[in-house]
Length: 411
Image 1 (tube, one colour):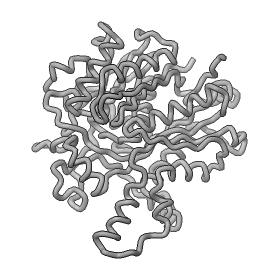
Image 2 (cartoon, helix red, strand yellow; image 1 turned 90 degrees about the vertical axis):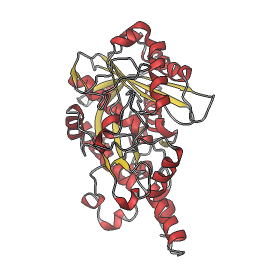
Image 3 (tube, rainbow, N blue to C red; image 1 turned 120 degrees about the vertical axis):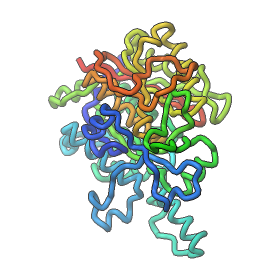
């Protein structure tokens, strides 16, 4: 069976550093950080009182009656999805809606609604839980609202594989198109975890970065000897994936080709990454794209800034790319936008596609002191102009689901 080609025809972003793809990209390339000290109302008592929040107010996008039905995670998703649709210039009225679907990844779902409900019940000792709490909080709410808003009758699926959730959503959406099950898939991720309960839980795991005493914005330091952990972020990113000939038939602007998706699992420990699992996911993506390792010109790393992940990911890249590993630009943009958990994969795939179309590699920031175990070219401190033909985006997760995406130039 010959697989159909998949085009990326639309992109949308609401995240730390910007509420559009262009604003986000401009700040990213400039090396600006969206990490900051969180308000005391949610960070008081935390060992790590920092995060990367989006400058987003749902009241600017939704009327009050609608807003009451939307958790913050759904608000972010709807706005980013709308941007991607506008960018694609799609008119769903002209499409066969049964062949259009929604694929969303999220790790925590409607955390704000869950938090509010528990606060009402346990802190206020009240039983006046909002009647729409279940509908607001359910993990598949973002996908459901997108499907309802645009009348999409095709598959509507939500994936929750922790930090690789939205990378899985993109990959599975692309596979549906490749195998002829649909023509257009709106795929992405959303996460809004910056609430007291979630922050406390992550703080208790001792995986969050220590706040830098001089400048909170530099606290996330992937691959650095001084790294202390990850920084939680919030936001959403969506792409429109479209069957290649379908996109050409309507004269769509094709940003890139979605070329490969690899999936492999760690099975040794629920939080400890493995070199083998990460390497197999990268190799699987290369096989799916029918590309040799030599074809990859940039890797957007998972790069969480935890001690284990960064060293393991570096070693896995060496396994896959051998001696050439040292010649490939690798960067972790989490150093600036934080870790968006379930939305990270989609956001970083957008970064990879933007890198491809602009021939610019964004930097890894705050990498002042090199870790001997992390010895690749991490594009430290400044963006770099580079000729890119194919790019890779890595997403690895607690639970062990490793997902890797590859995009290449449209031609």
